[in-house]
Length: 211
Image (cartoon, rainbow, N blue to C red; front, side):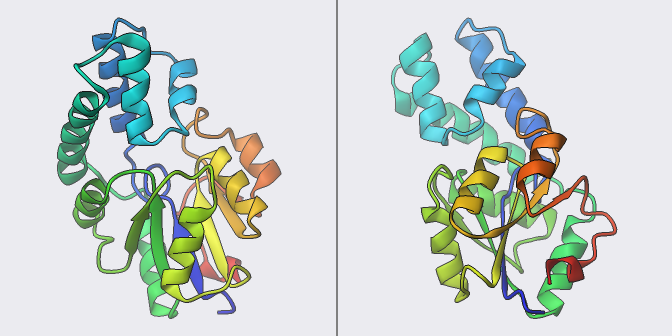
């Protein structure tokens, strides 16, 4: 393959964990006296975990400190990743096919290493992927993942369900796979308009489409 590397998002792209995250965030909202809503989910979607913690502590007074709320988040998430996180249908087969073709792969996520390692291990991805974490409003996390793989921007795809992350990848010159998960992450129409390649599922995906 001409493609030498693929950078995957984790939640909603490789792992079916978005409902888990929405429930964790909804629990925090209710504990803060805030009604969960699609608007709140969309507002929280691009935030890192420390930023989510700060949102609920500083705006709504949850917990004794930002770190206190972050501890609540982390504890709930590590448990969820290690026990209920599953691969999105077809995702593991795609990763295995790319590995067999000699394509390097990594995961870029705003989740912590402990969460990523727990989720990737539980779903069977860990032998194939290295993980890095940071905010995706800047291309820094993607460049770090790509450099670790030893590939160029032209040789590397990014796969994301979040439209803001697709836009970050696009601006940095990467080709993008936009995979639909939920409307707050990015509508199907947005993904079709902005991703190099938009798909609804990994099931039956032919890696030759990545060139």
